[in-house]
Length: 355
Image (cartoon, rainbow, N blue to C red; front, side, top):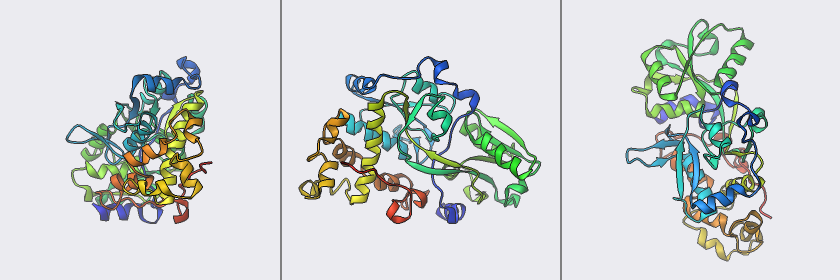
């Protein structure tokens, strides 16, 4: 498996999960009647409920998936667990709500979920017209294209006149149209209601190729009957920055989600892990003291306990640990960090300062 992933991603080393939603399914926040939330409302609801309602994917191995034991697992799942640990002191205090591409924004708008962490791309329309607020980008990704290895298709131009499968309710169809139009390539599109139906149609030969985020394509190697029979083209069709989304208007809740994510990244920058975090409690570094809640009162400013970051890191791990657990060299995916490496290692992940 690893050799296919390495070949596929190559120098681009672009990572992560599938993306996002079409104009007809996104709708506006105003149309839903639930476009904003009073600041503090979500935190109070989560505290009163005693658990976090988390909108997730349940069919994307490595990111959001239900394993053979019936447990939710993946990179996005652990991001949600970190929020639960920070807010409630318990990473397992999570109620998972599996959502389709079409359902996910409505679930946020209506308050069915407190936070959406489901391979969702941050775009202008979603940050405004749809009524969402986004936390930091947890995964920098880009749209790719999978084809049968025996097809000898090596470029987008080779897809001229062919049929390409896309999932309904995602941005991939628009991105595909933009890129193919720019290249002057005529093609046909076949849409499918969900990822599993699309993969089944592709394996059956009903479509000549299929497209989604490169991370989603790589994830599919875990479910394809013969992974070695398929390749991902080198071209990247779009930028797909994936981030947690909450309902617009609750600034306190958005701040909480934002700084929990930053705490995981900052912990990796400091070399703080699940196993050694207690060794840092005696640190005389004021930045570490503020991060772990020893001094500074930053948690109180958010409406949380001052040890909110300590809870998230000690119960779930830092950003790198979460990445390696689900996507790293000891997994079937062996996804290079690439753009998702820390900034000092040539990547884009960078925490704002805790002060």
